[in-house]
Image 1: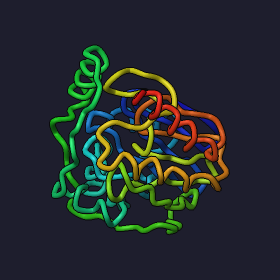
Image 2: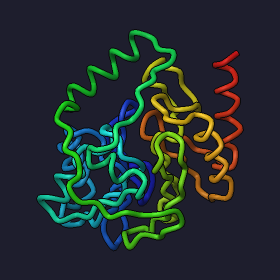
Image 3: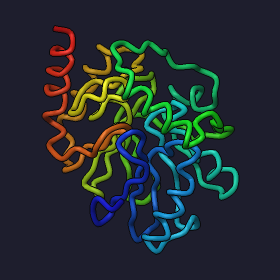
Image 4: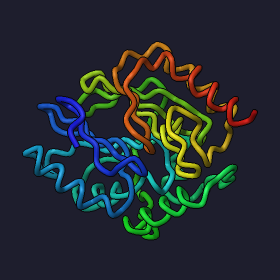
Length: 241
């Protein structure tokens, strides 16, 4: 799905990954689930591109539902995969995330599980090699993606700001559709290691200039990143009330 002149999405509101398309090639932000491989190929064809145009994959964190086809691209096509140093172990399958679910509803959870199984979530290919990044790094990839540390969901969660796409990719630092309750709108993401820290970290988006805030789960959100923290905090307070 084309979102803008340099911006495409594959997947859907349950699990999504993104492509930044520039004259220098393509940067993939997150890699969804293994079954998104076919969608990657189909979207590249629509774009008039091929796997040879993919220059790198940037992971917003190391959870399995963001690793998807990353190792396949690295192993079979020599595409480097970038992940924050604090999540490198998780991306390699070593450090396991916390799985505290909190509130949930049967239908959204069942929908998430069915979709994930359909995209072969049980066949996670962990990374065998990663290129580690840190806060503030500008990566040598199309769109010059800049790393913004957002610890909380995981120790190495990051946002990726790509001015060429007018977008900031936030992974699971927040969600716009809870996979556990089906609730829509900006809100905290479930399965977060340290919820209070995740909320505090969102303040680091206040100086980012972008029209799109793009989560790994939920619909793309258009608006100022400066307003994100207050909106997510209000949603968290409403849930706790």
